[in-house]
View: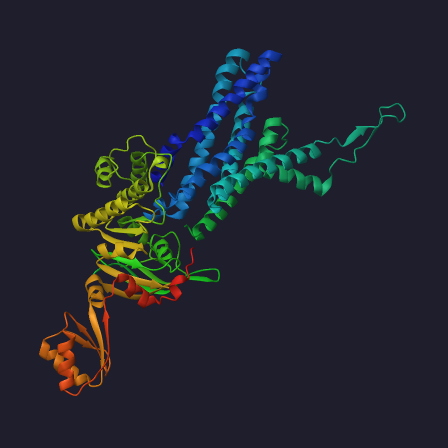
Length: 267
Length: 309
């Protein structure tokens, strides 16, 4: 496993795609800080602090598809198998590498935010404990992103195909999560304008109730992009639930991925 | 005889398609084993099974006596190096970087052998040129260098000269011979370029429709292919007596036919047989090469049907 990890990390070092992803991740908070500086606000650091899970979710979809797909397209995965590395070890080493790359993207995002943001706007309003809790939840969400995209990339031995599937999955999750969150954020009562004094509250027909509300909330909590959006928007009531879903999704994806990869005919 | 690779009744199916259909073969240690077969006959499928890229559907495969289901097979595969179809190289890396990557995967303690390995395959002057800018021959040689990185005892090369120019073919041939003679590496080469194999191989295995139809050594093949005259006569005993009298080597193939080897004076033989009251019914001169031997073995009519998988 160590040998595979070292080899993967050295390949990561040579990867232009990886460095490009880091550059983009660093550029986003830098631009956000300067735009806030222009428009004038003192919450710039807090506002930009937890946007990274969404960005990393999209970035790792592309990165994992291409980086791991190269092993198939250039046939180099055969070099690992032929000299006796077991398939579960190859899979896990790739997953750890992908998570490591995602963490590097996180550092690339945080560095300009902390250096520029803190020096321009001062320390954030958020307490240290709150930051630590949300940061931990975001890490588990990033892990589940990696596990999901890794499963696709290790099962589908086509670099372009796997990258497209990963990207579509990321955007589909983004679309579904946005829609679900907008539905869940509907108020239970709305003001009935044009009746009586104009301040009478009536039931909102768009408000989700009962089992449907529980199902939609569960779905948005389960989807890594749903978690990322809740973290970014700060709309999660039960933060402690999210890591449980993330770990469960990671475990399921990894077990399924390894089981299929174990049986896979490599050409 | 000690064998590096043995397979017994090996089968591999993909859905309804049977790629290997009870394949049995033996690769002797120290040999250059030419694995001959048309496209779609199962050569690459067998190599994929040997390398652990795929699992057999039925049958057994042993590398250095260790079965493919044995847990120890992972360790045994460390003695193996292979180039399957296309060289497995990172195109964005240089030759040296590719080898360093393979050394890391192997867990080699240092990179000091890399320069020697690059020199061995003739890539010592490629510098910072990445593999995507290499010629086909250079990529093939880099693939072989990667296969040699773990200092294997058994090298598997799948169609190593496919697409190479004449100079590249000669270089690969010389490299294989050097590895076999100087390092004692057993080599399994699959190919359908028979002339090239004939210059290299010490043993041959002929595969057709997923089965090895014949295995023989180069000496046996030479004997089977050498110049001979096939003769059909009315009295086989008279023929044998005459041939013994001339001191010629021959083999009786039926009660009216024989094959005579070496230089033959047909007039003298015919007169001698005439004196014994034996008539010559037919006379054919045969001079088979590897190609005609192979065609005879697998059937020329079916040879047109090629299946690429």
